[in-house]
Length: 186
Image (tube, rainbow, N blue to C red; front, side):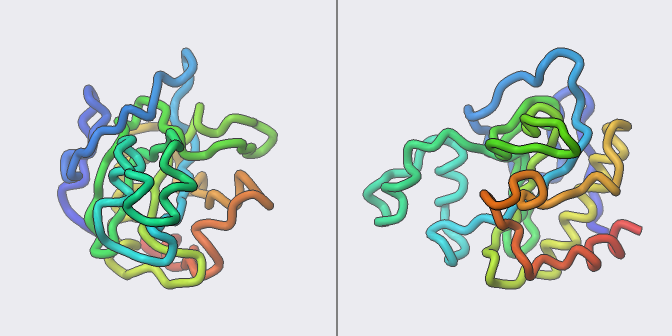
């Protein structure tokens, strides 16, 4: 497991992460604590990795003229708590105590509005590609740190975006290695 994964209890920030704070977040409903971790997959432009595009999307600075695809998403106001880059680098956009705008229309075990009670972690990747070993190591260390910092979370409450928005979302995709993640968390 990656060392240094500790969450500041006051700020809700992962001390080992690069911080690129997003304005696309707000307070959770009163009394609501994180109970679910949602794993996503993202690449911008689709199927391409690296570059500043994900960070610009999550911070509201994605220029529609930078790539033809960006014109279709530039106005979105979305974010996630964390991004795990291809090399395993953790980047934080929203403190864990706040509500990130990552799940959209969603439902988990009969509960709608998953943003209210979840933490969103984006993996830089695509449905049809494979994720890197470094990403799984970072993700498992992050989940362990989150479960330690928030007693309302459990390693069994880790799902894909496709699980909370079936038919609408497919990420993190069929190539995501859930069994490997479970082994790393054991």
